[in-house]
Image (cartoon, one colour):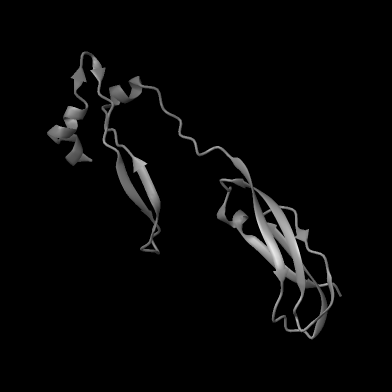
Length: 146
């Protein structure tokens, strides 16, 4: 930060013109990374303002907010199961995301060799952005009615 504050070009950005402060600062792009990964997780577009204490108190604070929540739906189609390790069963599937209501397919009665079929469509409502990544996991379970 000191390199910027004492650099003449940076000081020109704050030069006074007819009693007004030039508020245009260059936009910087920073990569977001996890400490355990070398892969970029996203980018942050930002600007940096370095102000004396008296100037910072003069201007009101800007409240930062996340994006507004929007409702979407996740659509899942369940067609068939394969390689279920039982010779015969009455199978159905159950689906949910996070805290949503669990939804079931119908039951495929007397299914042989784990090859059940449903052709079942499921709609799961979600609100984005999520409160936590754990609430965005799609859970799928295969059950035997017996």
